[in-house]
Amino acid sequence: MASTLDIYTGHFGLKERPFALAPDPDFLFWSAQHERAYTMIEYGILTRAPITVITGDVGAGKTTLVHYLMKSMDADLTFALVSNAQGGRGDLLRWVLQALDQEAKGTDYVDLFGQLQDYLIAEYAAGRRTVLIFDEAQALAQEMLEELRMLTNINVGKDDLLQLILVGQPELRDHIRNGGLTQLAQRITASFHLTPMDEASVRKYVDHRLKVAGGSGKIFSAEAIQLIVDISRGIPRLINQVCDLSMVYAVSEGKFTVEPWMIQNVMRDGAFWYSVDLPESQASEDAAKAYRSAT
Image 1 (cartoon, rainbow, N blue to C red):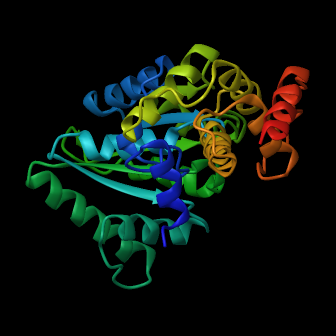
Image 2: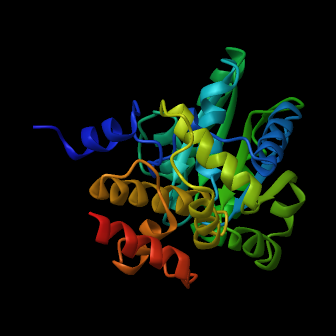
């Protein structure tokens, strides 16, 4: 018996699910905003910026950019990704060492700091630079952010041994600006705020993901795309969710094109978790009724 996913992909002639929510660099769509954000990250790395900050709304595509970065950059860079770190100053070094695949030896802060410093020096001697990425950095306590700044002071001669990339939601900017973190702010030499995509980019985004998944890119009607723009407000994660659910609804109706009334059904059935005012469309309602009466 075929699984639901097999029916889903087979129905539309796809090789894989095009609108999965998990970050996947293979599906990365280069909108103008994402290109600028990535350029700023590259600039920060190449100029050895002590701290680079990338912010954006929930689901804007920040984590996907990070995964693409780690997959694409040169082998002379050692990346370590820390996600959803919590705790205080005493916990920070454990998070960092764990991200670097280093087992923390001891519990004393000085010993842990020495272990990190020895690791960074060894990487430097081997011709590699270390880039530490903190995802969801808006959740970091002020004392952890200040401690991160101090880690960027580890050096050999004139060469700093550690670069930081802080990735987070918009409140990260406010936290840095208004939290008394003046010294941290002064070490940020590259930053970018990722905004939602415009209507034209959303249309290209949907087509792009369908084509990467092995489709023709012409599954959603123009009117359906417009409704997706309104519902998602240009945020990639929300686009993925509403597109994914709408395609499931299309399969259940035996249809090969997603129309606005299917999306409206997704919204009204409560399948889409995000609260939004649903635009009314009498034409969509009439189309739904006509289809059901004909079948």
